[in-house]
Image (cartoon, rainbow, N blue to C red):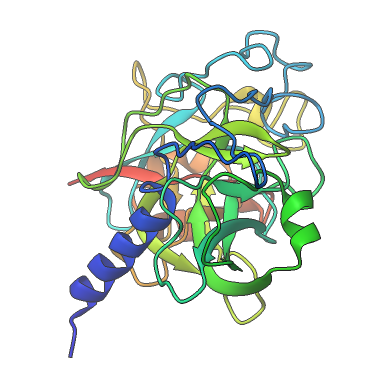
Length: 317
């Protein structure tokens, strides 16, 4: 019987095959068939995570210091990375990718008939980007069976894919892949085997770039949604007061960027999810909160205040 670690390793290899191994461009001359597109020379989609349509906690209209549309984002700088605690008082660090829905968006992975590995060189296809209705950083892997003579990157949009009528199989496999502007960086990962590089995909015949976070293999629940895990946080100004809640920033220790935000789970836990349900505790209890138990004992001002994508990238005792 395979151990949990062996199963996790096998699944990690599969996800790497699906999402990372597909980034090499494939381009060939095929005058008698459909045009094969070259990702290296194809147009690139403009991405804006901070528009009023895409953003929630991070909107340029409320914070002019946020990067311009399609400008690279350094996620290793505040306010996109936070130092928190762990359930047992560990020191943790996580990225902030803003509010996300629980319904995942589809990502289409192409397989030739009779083959069990994705078409080499074919970039994955998505049908929404930040700002579009239904966008989510969490993608539900959908396997598409294409003819045995299919050439990589012949199909580069969902519209073209749907028009072919190929067989599609929706899996329960989730991947956390935030679409970001080209040149964006997020240099921290929970495991040493995770790639920090930007990956490429197709959206409406344009190239998009995305990160991958694989600190934990994720699957949809019985309801088909992204699983949730709680986090307890405190703000400099309590919600309900003028300027209270997220605009006031997290409470931190004096002369430090260390918060007492406490996620209920860590990547090694069976029920971990980077999609967090935010519970807000009274900032008067800040000094009393040092772990999950003390956070749950604090005065809770709001439960389920938001649902945010915050992959944990570091844990230290």
